[in-house]
Image (cartoon, rainbow over all chains, first blue to last red; front, side, top):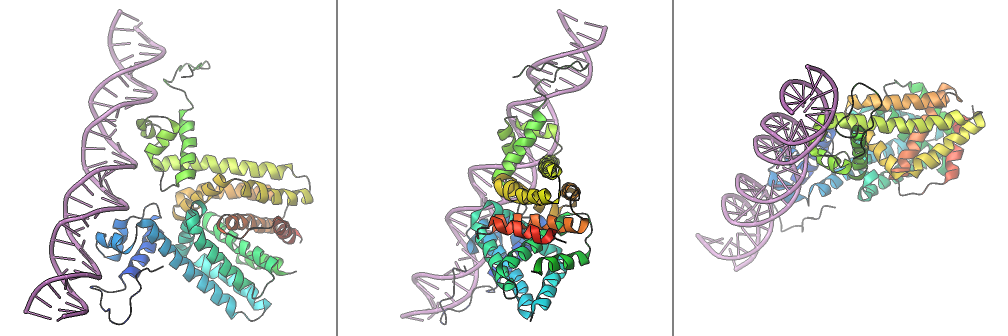
Length: 190
Length: 190
DNA sequence: ACCGGGTGTGTACGAACGTCCACATCTTGT
DNA sequence: ACAAGATGTGGACGTTCGTACACACCCGGT
């Protein structure tokens, strides 16, 4: 990813803080969450990150490369949280509870993540290049679920989580948390 | 072209064919499917529909209004197909089969619809104005499912359909059709 | 026959965009 | 101390965008 890995030791000191690249990526996600991929431009990201416009093309080979890195960071952080939840579960019962918690808290909790997810999905639906990000994300989720469930159940749970997420975002109808529990129960009883 | 033989109303004769508005909407969906909402402009839609640029602002109050109409048409046509499938089912068993068919054929079948769905979802996730479209869509799906299933099961099925759709679009991993059947079975057995 | 208003269009305009590159500034080796 | 190279920047350029408006066209009424 980061093509400019420091050649260690002798080479010190960027002119400015070395976190600039990272700041730009974070700013990019912020802008996407606020204005959508459609409304994201070099200029807006530069303003958000408080770097000059010229820095955009200096650090990234165009908007597309920046988007790719930004969404990679996003997906990685989301799936890390997912994995942590599932790893913490010690048996099937607590794993079920973890799945419910993921849906109710992580997914339902944060509007920013919700919006960013959709932006990524849309990008990935059209451009295969972004599908490596979503594939990796899903593979990691699946692996985490398979710590506790058989592969078939895992697929179903994964789909359920996804589907509830979508409906949560797009449906006016309020959701009853108990429904989520019930659904998880039905799917995981074999 | 197509000299318009007006049916009787006092008001005879638009200058051009009265289907222009509709053609623009269809062209808009085509452009969105090809280039995304991000890449959709008045000019591209005008070119696709083969109408002058000026016609865009003449028929629609800006891009946003056009998008809203376009996605309304899209969602309506999709949910009509869904409803037809469910209405045709005569008992629970055929209803289950219908759900499986919807997932495997309608949803898995058409890349264009998949992409357009995601574009709409993303729009709706950010802008409440577009959520009326998705809400109506989902309400109609739910109503159709409730012809055969109880409300709770309906919600779960709905979420499952959505989730499998997403994963189908974004996951490299191939899906086994039998998994879909199994999932539907598990959810619908009470 | 011709006029008046409704219908539709060509085009110009300012804003915003991504990209590029000459140049300013700093670091390092000598 | 200074040259040379690495690092980062400001602003100009050409493109594309949405919008607006003056005007061409057509039709029904007189």
